[in-house]
Length: 231
Image (cartoon, rainbow, N blue to C red; front, side, top):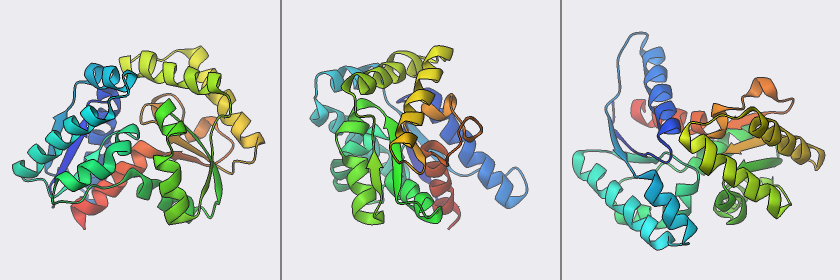
């Protein structure tokens, strides 16, 4: 099995899900309790959020590049950034190392392509919804059109739910209701499916709660890692 390096901690709650999904999938494919070789570098989430507020993406990129370099030196053969927003710095991180970065956009795009959808809604951090790095990846490589919440207040509310609640392990019923309302609004605007573009959102919303296809980015990205490990 190949060795994967995980850059996690943003948040550690969803990083746990990556670890669980990858190990369980490898167990299932082997039919026993074989575990894959994983190396985890966990970032300081509080510091990353502070730098996001200051719009110091250059310093966040430095943290990610340092982590990726350490993982490569430790023997990782590929790297997984365990957060959607971290992929805003994908170009910088990919240039810093000589091993592949498994882009979450490819995991999402292949799943949407398999479902034969062309227009999907995306909910995530304010940066993921507004800065275009996921939307451009899906449009340019998979021909998918992305809808996001049109209201600034809505995007800010979702950002608050992620950063001030889910990232701290707080799962509020009213916040879940709000998230479901935003997903319903995207459906009414023409979304054929919904991308849970924050790795914390699947902790509170699953396919069972939705009437349209749901793309759990944590699970899809973890399965991409498994394919690499076993491929």
